[in-house]
Length: 64
Image (cartoon, rainbow, N blue to C red; front, side, top):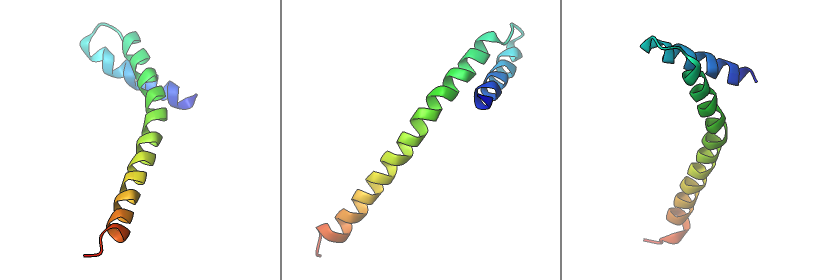
């Protein structure tokens, strides 16, 4: 909840630079925060799995 409020506030401040208002920026900030909360952990997990698979393939896959 606090993260969404902060993201909305930051988005609003960024959108006000054009002088039109900040509602759309606040909505975009909250939406990007909601997406980032789901995507970033998944990317970290997939990246760790890929690095682990590469390490194991080098360690046990080739005997040269």
